[in-house]
Length: 445
Image (cartoon, rainbow, N blue to C red; front, side, top):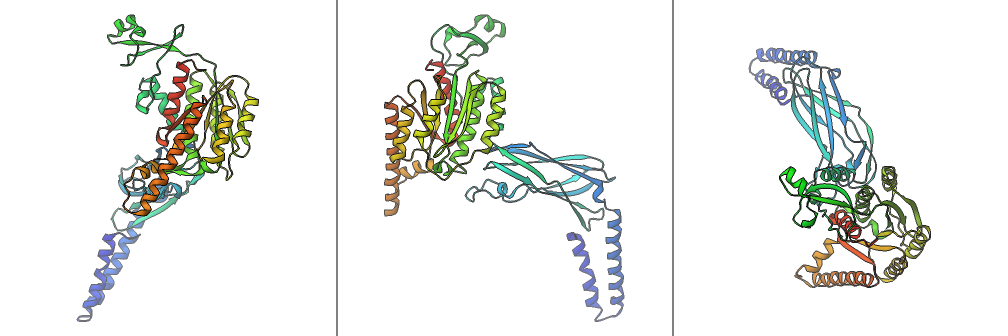
């Protein structure tokens, strides 16, 4: 491929041919000039590195995380004897490059890099991808261009690095939780330290004192040794059962921002289950629409987490109305031991709302039900917008009525002894974990 330098030099030949109208000597000069240019291009071709002088490799997690910045690294090894200017373009799946049009912060094309690669050196190029849907995808080839030693032409080669990749629920958030837990910084992701109630708990660990800690839990010996306040953290009761049931009916496929409700729920369920298993409790899961789709028996341990991860990867919404009565009756018949039953769904009102209320109320006793829903920030913003025309006024009235119906439905559930949680999608994971920790701390199970 010609460079701008070669194109500018090539303009000399037409100029000489134009002058040949006045003197035939310029025609000879034009022929010599063109031959010299051709000779330079041939010489650069001989001196330029062949494709075999480069080794290109792409590195990334085999399981990428949904709604997270996943790092992709392209490594170029240069085996040539001189420094070379290169251009590199990778081809991740198009679905990740051209997301929703309203989001101007996301990239609008394949990542392209330009660099000077030293002789016999290896250089890495990094970029991030942000998948918004679970499923199977594929990286395509990597295109590499390198400049010839005379700067006249680019050579190009496409390296066949076609690689299948899977997008799973957000595993990166789980790793982040582990890191923050080790550094006593869970508040960075919105998790609170639940206050402990009652006596007779077993020692779990020592940690730095937090402003809302009871001063009676300060370890004075550890404080004296470390020269800063240290709190004793007690162990909550273990081996309790937590059961997650989530609706995969048609309303769960409705979008909230960049993703649909179901994918937000799946990300939250994965992190929530990891925390539950880390606390020594058992966790089980069930998905349902018009009938029960999957049922996973409550178990403890790391193996259960990986079973859930593979299971959540495959869950898809179905274009039908959920049958809460059938699903929750099935759960109660299978799960005899008392459990915290967390039901993720969307409040649609009408007959569906009545069936949800009847189903979750029917779980008591022996279970403690908690209904979790995702609030819609767009609907809330619409209800608060000052209208400037008749259509906008009508939209605001409808939005306010929908929000009022939603609040009334949640209040009716709470009056029947059902716990509820209605939060924006961005706060879902932290909110459900905080509620679980509070329930355990209060001994409600």
